[in-house]
Length: 521
Image (cartoon, rainbow, N blue to C red; front, side, top):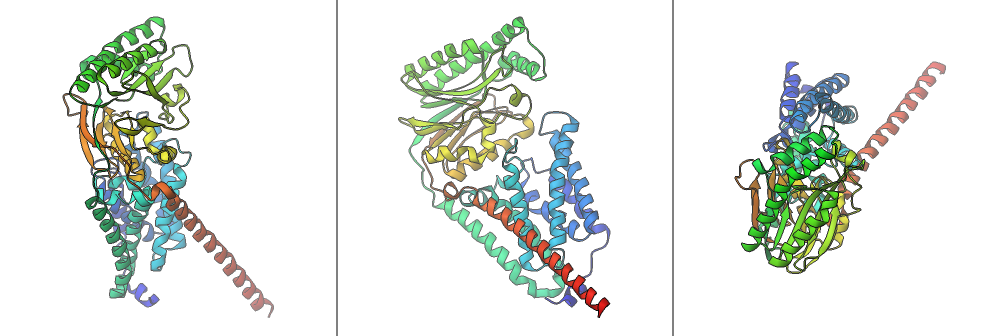
């Protein structure tokens, strides 16, 4: 493409890039909502337009400020804590985002070739992948999650994990900007646009065919998820709120907390018996819905085991037990008991939420619990925030996991987003999933992400999820290659930057040699 045609494309009025920046910031504030699908596609295109149409330094500062402000406001409704912490987290993420766009501006720029459209997708995908490694928030905030309400796109994660979907979304932004920047070339941009359209069409076609050809993944099992809330749980909730605020309990306060929690525990057992009588074969309590002091834990487990033996069912007791004298006082545990009344396996939450829970929780299990459950399948367990870490389930998948029990406790600011994100784990590795949630959206899905039961805590009168859920495995390529796409994307972007740096050094060296020759004849 000639430089003359590129020069001939008139730059937009000076105000337009700033309008694009504002619109992109507005879309960013919708990423943690049910309406995130379109922001996931267009936010990056608007930010890139601003970066490409302004000077590098101006673009960096503008993106830094806009992302900090927009993400900070969005964080206020998502992460509990102070205003300072919400905007502090936003600033850290904004520095990275603005830095990646600056790298694109310097290495590719507004006159890059079509091949240059690959740099920013690779860089952003690599940043998301590498930042999720060791990050206490795991994959929270990954762009791919914005497409959770588009099942045909979600199927891509069965091949590439989250990273292929992030790449696809950011590539749309770069191709759209590339076509605009080279619009003076007319039809000569069509082959490049056609390449992207072909890839997108293939991804959509794969998703459509995968869902259309999907049969039942296994025999259906009647499951029931149980949460006790409302007036009966008021004392329990008040006690937990006092603990998490940093209040120190004396012996009397601990006894009062245990007594306030007792009605919830009794109701959980009553509802479990009722659902078993109605035909449920597997029952699951939401995360920490039952609360006991440590010395009361085994008595509760024994009562659960007796109920399971009497009714011939499998019961997942999710219990928060407290040891008042210990610095790490909380044991957040999922205990599966079977029709023989015995404990099949126990699992302690391995990824507590950063903050109070992480500071006060006992060390968690090394990996999710997994074991054969006659009449159901190979059943495993993890808890809530564990579901934001795809690598947690690698070993469980290798051991033949067919059904994951994921009891959870959310809050309104992250519901239903947190549940939608957990469904990605089921599609990535092809297992069925029951996520029973206190203060959130409960679901039962199969390995394709198809929903067999759903219950919204905030609209339901009774927080009991019922479903006839097929239990079995769906083979996926992601289960074999893991996060290779994320890793390779990051390495590709790093290699691009390194090659550009080497070329720059060589060019400067040549100019210096030529200048010396001119000077000294």
